[in-house]
Image (cartoon, rainbow over all chains, first blue to last red; front, side, top):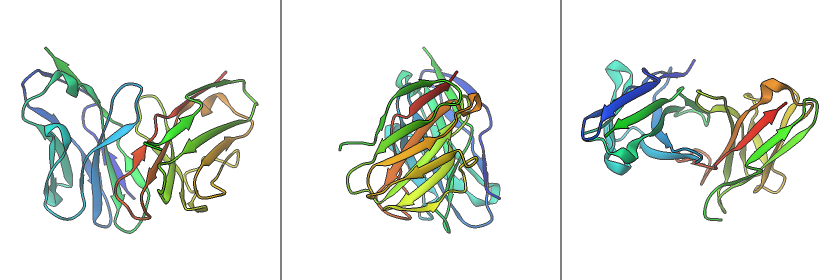
Length: 113
Length: 114
């Protein structure tokens, strides 16, 4: 069975502080991993993706994530939070053998001025 | 079009009525996905098309839910005899090809069943 776990449904950081959003997955076959961002009243937008190339993936808006197979993790980070980063973030997994995407329950990021 | 569009954006219906939700994918995109997203949850897979062929409908909750994409472009998700538990955000996504890793999401249709 495949699943995605996002630890912390709500995360608050001060503007300029490090952002760390956690994602762990379980998969019986090598997965593809994704982070999406959702702003209010908008659709989900792809931030970055891991597809078995480099384990450190850089995305848009200064975000990056590192695939750690030994920890089955794909945590999302950004060195310095900006007010515009406040949004809902979703981690997702897709198996290399299929087309279904499985999403985590999301983490709401609040940036405090 | 420039992006995935969905209509209506908001739909309020009475229990027992049928509803049809429309998705217009990005032009040329082969694959189309439907998801349901409850409040405070991530998107939950419902069904998936390549061209006009429904490849996977394992996520449809029961036989009141159906989807079609007759010409390989626009898709319709139909819910018959709606129930209050069907209330959710219904999202559509499209991707360039089967196996493509990048999905483009529409803004969703917020369905409320009263």
